[in-house]
Amino acid sequence: MIEQILAATIRQATPLLIVALGEIISERAGVINIGLEGIMILGAFVGWIGSFYIQSASVGLAPWMGILLGALSGMTLAGLFAILILGLKADQVVTGTGINLLAFGVVEVLYRRIFGATGKALKVAIFQPIHLPLLSKIPLIGPILFQHNLLVYAAFIAVPLVYFYLFHTHHGLAIQACGEYPKSADTVGINVGRLQAKCVLFGGFMAGIAGGYLSLADVPYFSTEMTAGRGFIALSIVIFGKWHPVKACGAALLFGLGSALPDRLQAIPDLGFIPYQFFLMLPYVLTLLVLAGFVGRASPPAALALPYRRE
Image (cartoon, rainbow, N blue to C red; front, top):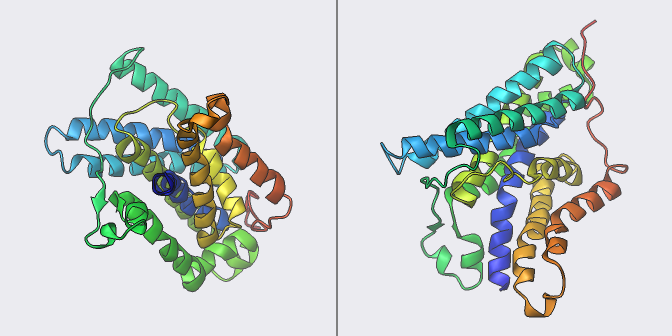
């Protein structure tokens, strides 16, 4: 039971971690993207349908092409967001909310248009678990850490890479300067708007990958409700992790545990008297508790969500 819960925790944490890493880069540059939920559902849909049509030519290549298409669709939607908030100086929170509404509306229309009102059960090629040689055979640790698909491994490998990039490279320090002191960054020759746009596009790319993960690795089907608030949970993970990749990884695992527990708790006979809806509430209750406890005490980048205008 413990092995299953911890292994499921890692699987459930993966899409949250992927989104959070992209959003950390975006927010460190001074831009908050509330539209992550919409970008994820678009990535899930495009990745799923892409894998379905490509698998007729190459089953092995289909999930990889699907995840790439999902990532590119996320970047495209993030590009629209960047034009509105950086080019036209629209409010970031309001625009992000509009992006969510747009994405869910477009996906719903396309899904019904292509597959009908009730949809169709389509079998798509997905990422399969890879048991790492020797490591996967280690008692207890092996099944928990080393029996996942490649996207899971890539997500956790990305944590130290993003950390090093953000805190130990010139470009990463420039990103932080844009989020803290954009005017000072501008005076030393950093193109604030261009760098922020790149960070927003990266965040959309990562959110698209996370959406593709849901329909190409987590489950082999698509539902218009499959993101289930994960984009908003990722925003709380960024706050809980204090805009730090390593801390955000720990926060993602905590929320992953909150998502993994409900299914296992429902299977315990002694807890059968508790309505299953209470178990399903766990990740969202955890989100509210985190936000209530940390939003007031967390210190975001000083210029977060503040449009920069050159004088």
